[in-house]
Image (cartoon, one colour):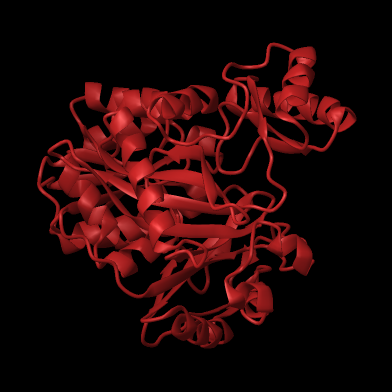
Length: 445
């Protein structure tokens, strides 16, 4: 097993990885910016290194500073968490070229799945269902207009190098396409350094369902069930649950088999997620993208399968067998995760500030993965995620009941936060019935 691990991230995910590392007897090393010096993950690490100012480009995306920290502390491996450099193939290659262990998929897999068009084509060749769309980047607006006419409106205009719900727009007709195309291309060039644009079929009423996969050290790829991720604002997730209330046993079998084929197609190792769109009217599902990293919502899978995904990542990176029998995976129960963000609960606009009160809920089946505590300052430099409230139980009905109590008990005073949104959601009949889709939040607003 790896003996020393540098966590190249911050907040709740850094704290989460550090917790597992220390449980396994692995020396945990944190890196942090000046803005994060007082956060819990820094105090809880065995060693912490300041790597730069608040600007992520000068700290958490500063590969030279991170590698220097790894060298100075004698780290044996680097875990990138999610976001920042987690899906940066060049960084993964540099880490390994430096003689360190990269806790994630290899750089070739990251590269293969990082470009949306290339990924779509790879998946189609592997027999994974994909929605109709362009198989090459659209060279200009005229080409996009021609492609959209062939696919049929409405269409999704998507940055080929995008991810996390960013760089996307919907066009219901040609006039809207002309506007969205220029907007998405400009955004893609600015954010990703690549203005390539993909045009694909858009489903007005659709569910977002994903499959957790794990590429084992012996070369096998296994699927650890699905997660429902349809509660979203601005194409970004707010709630995830497992199993999905929309997935039947027959559909689950097809969905998980397709996800395994997706992983096998790129020789995948370590944790990853195959994201799909599900048409609830027909039961058809289509490949959306593959996230070559640990997902924010991994805890719901951990509850349903009774495993620690971070531990499994470390075992794969160490060349060890998993803690479970890959041929006898048995899910059980239900789990829901709610993302507690520093944002107002109506328009979801960021609201940083000093946390004057922080009281986490407790009780059976309640887990909080938090990045902050009372007295910390939520700064405007990073993602607004404060904590993840995860609730588990034997049935979805039991989880909903427990979740109501947990949300009511979660007290945050200081920065704006969306706790009250979840109280509203848990009373929403569409959500409670399980028959919701990606438009649920817009209908609530």
